[in-house]
Length: 413
Image (tube, rainbow, N blue to C red; front, side, top):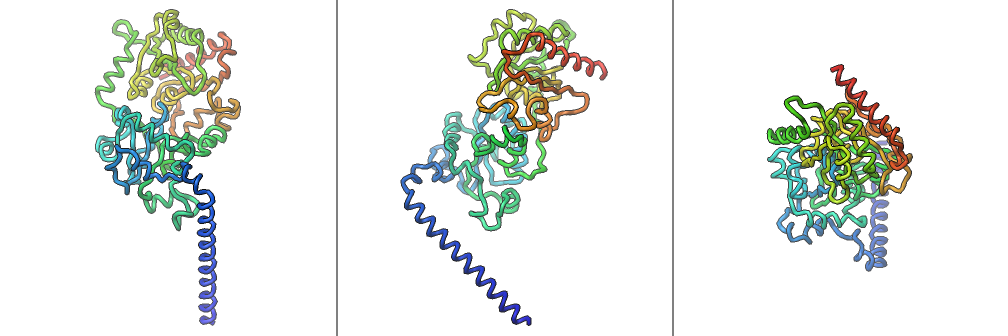
């Protein structure tokens, strides 16, 4: 009986091996035919560009170790903070990873990671070279796909992160750390309400239970600089609390000059100093009219590294939802009122944006990955839609109600 079972098992194994060989041979034949038929288009297509070839094609990378793995750190203002809050966990798990970043981002990176890690794991280059690297991800190319899958690595099966945690990253890969460069990611984010932290963990191949970190490497000079900025507009020895208003925004439509003046006036009427953050305004925003109508307010420019500290020192932060407001909620402890105006560049209605987490629930969505809804903290998102359609009395009531809640909480502490 044992002999019969052994013979049967042997026949089964041979059959499986034969079947596998047949499938492999068929795949090779089909692949060969496909490559010959479409060779011209494949040569033109960015899908045919290997990651290591992209690195080799740039003279500034000629001395890079091609056995290592490279990640491009290039994103918008608020996204950089979010990515950095998970990057330390990735660098601990994957010793072959190196991060290519803009020279100008050194101070920001230094908030989340220690000097030795930065020196060993980061490669800082000029902005133009970084942009040229990012360009390889659009149109969608081979570097915009998953780093590996079951077709290229036996044992990888249907999920990638556990395989990479056990076996390490394959050599010579190049990946971008911004979700906008990957197919379906923005759909998952903006239409289906998948959390942003989940997408960052997917890009970094991190376990699902990985927690975000806060900036923890502020220097004494940082604290002193933040204190100096926060004192603007104060009179005498007693410094009354201030409301920070973030006016610069690129993802949603901005408030009008008259509406911004109204918001400032309401804050002043409630007894607050008002600091207006004009960082990154460039030529997009004109503040002369606003500051003439509200001479008690002060214009400030906040170095990117200090944004969370300035927010933290404020009694409250108010502004149209966007990167600066995200940093205020996720990386400070101040009270926050975000004004959600119509989104720009999404092509969907505001009702569809962020799936079930849009509008009033948006900070609950963020709280999943960056815990911020603590007891005693007032964090609200007010949906306005088309800002041009908002009446002055509605906006005034909205700001007043928020500040009254803040004052009530502050008086009870």
